[in-house]
Image (cartoon, rainbow, N blue to C red; front, side):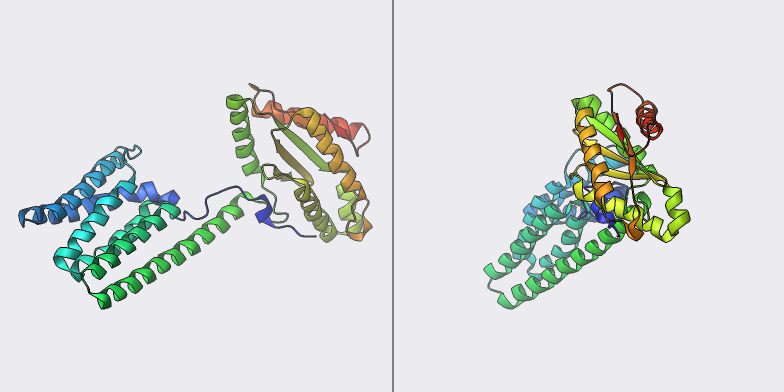
Length: 334
């Protein structure tokens, strides 16, 4: 049997390909935008294009405030979504005062929205800019230019979305390689430490119960010695598949090393964890394994006690597993 790492993927926002780099890049981008658009706004005000100048200056004000916050290492106080209304208004005014030359600003602003906003918000903002720009040209009766602008802006949006999708997929692949076991697709020990600490913090804040099942394959060395390492690897992958078939969406499976695994059961008390462990044990015994290997597991169950340390919780699960093995293996102990 084989398993897919996607089964154990965390719930991440895959459609935000540049989220990690956003805050880092917004300071230099904001500074450049301010330095460029400030003279444009001032020039429009001096030329008597008051409404256009006000729209540009409002956008500059938002970018300036947020850039200062980025410089000081703080979260920007104003959402970048507030840049969109004055930008859209400025494009309308520019289209009516400068014709097609005003429509040119639709392109950099469209790119800007995808860079500073999350995907859904960026799609909504770019759609608004598309409608505003095309409608303004249609109102002026320039159908040919409106059609050209509509198609070119649409192609720009499609191109940006395709690029962001590719970046997002590559980021997800890289992330999964860093946090999953390459053989079985279960999460690795490093990610286990992070997830268990997060679960402990949630328990402290909300009193939500969390239980760990520590699972060890009985006599796994004999499987490798008698049937070969390829069979042993197939057994490990098959075990992950079997557990995955029973796991709930919020449960997490980790390979601690060798033939030892840990299942993190969200919102689960010790008594329920024992029931889940026993059901898994029985399914494992009854399952068909490569080379007709008679497979059994020992399982130690431990519910987190609010206030105890991570090591203490893990040690209690390990102690329960030790008692299961000392008691004859193929059993669940809590």
